[in-house]
Amino acid sequence: MADTIFVLNGPNLNLLGAREPEIYGHDTLDDIAGMLEDRARDLNLIIDMRQSNHEGHLIDWMHEAQAMGAKAVLLNAAGFTHTSVALHDAIKAVSTPVIEVHLSNPHAREEFRHISLVGQVARGTIAGFGALSYLLALEAAARF
Image 1: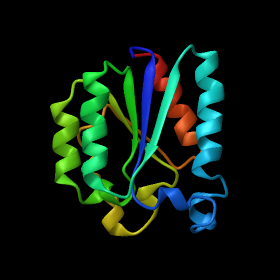
Image 2: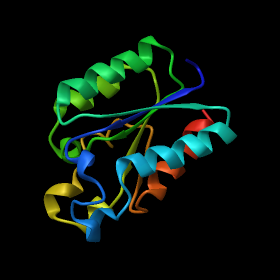
Image 3: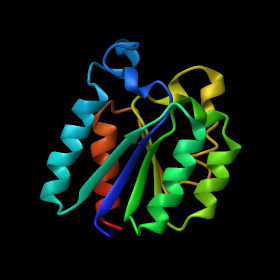
């Protein structure tokens, strides 16, 4: 599993492409998965892409990533970014590097989005580049 990157996606990201495309773009989560898988092959990496609307699933998957020896986790926690002490603590509890990913730039949006409990403990954050944010995060993770 050392060559595996977990890509974990939080609530409402299953609606990408249809949900507020003026903010999140027209790419679906499947489109993003395809882009990541194509680039991962070039980097000799494997993508394990998952999405859940449930906080506990994201936490369990982070624990799984560590237990399986994954190289990194790319985490788009979506709305949980700003509210989840549990995700914050889970990131602190695992040794697997976590990169926070956002399609939009939270700092250019509503004030409540300016605080990231995830970003406070992630290795780094990439935000504001649409689907490209995921590819940029993959490039960073490949260098761990």
